[in-house]
Length: 78
Image (cartoon, rainbow, N blue to C red; front, side, top):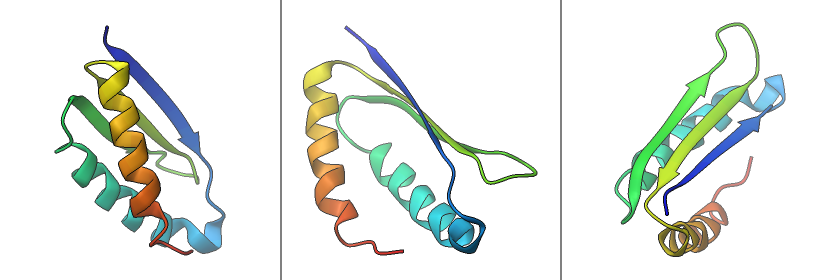
């Protein structure tokens, strides 16, 4: 069964540019993960809201992706 996730993030203004840089890198990597149907990052034009919209083939592949993301995110400190 396909799974769709929507996450909304509000980085502080001070960290907005760094957050966007990391988010774009993670988006590009995630799009290559097995089971990824769609992985899109949207940015609010006049604000600090970033919205990730993801679609995965199934829960097993999503969980595999989440484990990979945990390991990658340990390398980023804002």
